[in-house]
Length: 132
Image (cartoon, rainbow, N blue to C red; front, top):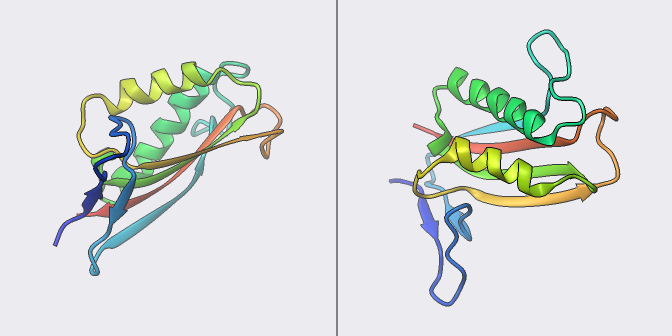
């Protein structure tokens, strides 16, 4: 049984997110905690630069996926938490450069907030993936 992507007729069909996803009963679900701009040394990459921070957060997310035996294509849900005043277009551009032309994007929820755990963080991305 495989993951089923739900994009009903009469709704916007987006290349960047799915409207719904049904997981198989026997799915191995990986929960990925919020990934941010920390590099492996604990330094913040791209202070003040949402594109650089998004790139680092996505790099971190992909490392967690790979460590669990997964790939970007295995994502079924992403939640993006961002500072309320950032340029969403810059972050979106990075996401699209990483996602590329892959089919079946995950579901996506975004939040704009007054602040994140560290005042230098501009974006944080958490996700869920169904592993092979």
